[in-house]
Image (cartoon, rainbow, N blue to C red; front, side, top):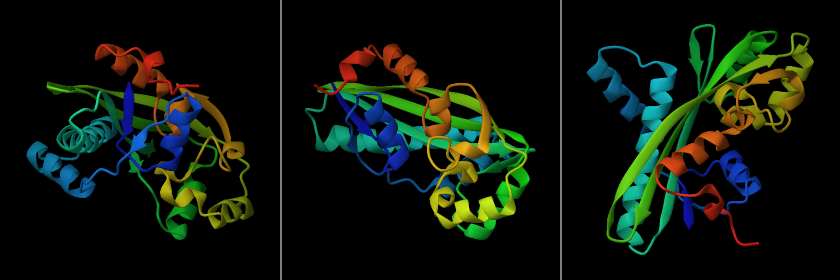
Length: 215
């Protein structure tokens, strides 16, 4: 059973590899801002974080699933798409990209607890069969140490790690020591909830252990 990850995220790839899966990776061709803007225009207001991450995860997975089905008609397996955002104090945060933005966020986050929202979309693809999707959102709360110093924040930002991850932090790498508590599936904070992916695969008639790479 083959697996395609609709993402080039190193964290998501590492997570699947640690879980015994060696996926093909394809970058989705999705304008996330345009997708979100269209949905909000139709709604007449902003989407909740859980709605937004699910919308974007489904758009990414659907784009790659279409390409896989068209370009690899013999593909028999699943396509996985994901999206994550961090909510704190009523504000929603994606990737900061710039050091000054990451620095401001970390000064707000220390000593506080926020929620990481992670959208998941899984498409089952098989030769001669229409793709079928299962989707869900997972959430995990994250509490940051209150005694993180400005010097530690600057040093962490200097590594470049927090600039390209949702919420400007990691739990499985350099950011881990600054986090005191995670409630929920820890892999959600890394990039995808493995337990949620397993449940979605089962909904699609796929045994999780069939996704493991040969050893």
